[in-house]
Length: 245
Length: 255
Image (cartoon, rainbow over all chains, first blue to last red; front, side):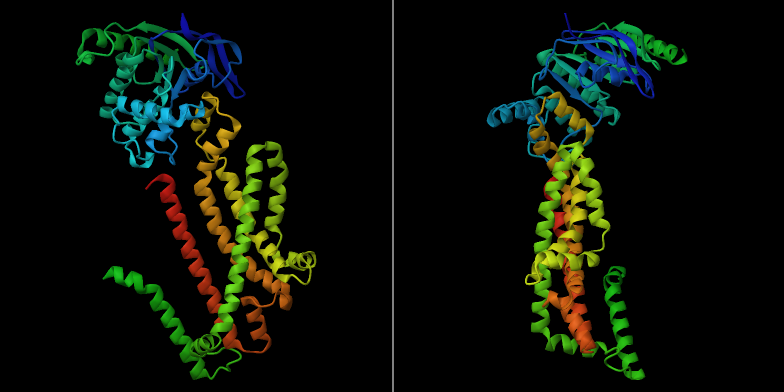
């Protein structure tokens, strides 16, 4: 049973084809990484899965309904006039959840990403990594079945990236949503995902699909294990082939 | 040392210019009706202070009422343009027409409409016309300034039109509204003075009328004194609004 799927989905813009046709099924509770060069349509695929965009051809099925899908963008995308708490509570507020309950759940979501004590801070007072954590808390506050991340850590430094990758895996472990995330960092993809899907540029097709063995969340030295290295090599090779093709 | 020099530089230049003016007037024996020395202007400012102050207050009052009116009308119209693309298409060209029409040219017409017995209303209406555009265009731009990804989040969570306006677009517009009001306030003062000139003696009582009246009587010192007061008022208003804007921005983004 898949949470969401693309069936021969394609997206055609006036300036050309952005995606597909692509077949992709996101299984319940799986962590799927979409990797590919810039402009290969991976963000477009993500927007289709989110229901933020409609395909111009083919089909999109979504078992996760409104309120069960959450998106985290490349930038934290917080409202500067709202506190961390109010930002995290926004999805609940829009859904008409009573203020007291929304506040309690927002604080709990912030606590899960290690931001206890920063509830009243404004985005301008937060570091890039903290702002991204608020964005994650906002996404998780509705306890979604499907979490979509569009190059969420691209603007952060390596140490913060790695810390956030573990944060995402811990969040996943708590409620086991299906996660689809877009990245062009092969190591990040293999580290975080249970399955890595490689896409090639124009017209945006899937050229590789690799399961990643190993427990989730990852053990301490997972990046040093031979299995990790081998899968990363495979993904890199597919990526290079896709770019050359 | 350098800091002090920087702080004093504008005052030093002003003092130098005033001194040069004073000396030139005395040395060249310039007739007072043509160009009185700054000392004569200062004396006139002190002597006529009650009259000039009342006139300045009247002009400022017109400007403030006009600012309030322009603020209401401009923001209401901007909100309409944000809610409906059709209204946007309809309103924008008209707003531009209002912007490019010189207020002096409108004055006689507005005076007739306001009724010749109510020149005050005409002055306010004319100043509103001048202050309207920066507030309107600021609000219209601000209401479209929300982060597109935040807009997508509102789509994702099925926000209603009302939630989108009150929770996203209006708060996102705040910095633009502050900027628009700052510019609009300065313009409303200019608008009030220009409207007084346009209204002529009918405008009665404001600073522009003081300048016209003093001019007619060749009391050039009183004329310049009124100008000085007008300049001071503009500077103070501008400084005040800049502080308000900065304080508003600090409140908006929390630091």
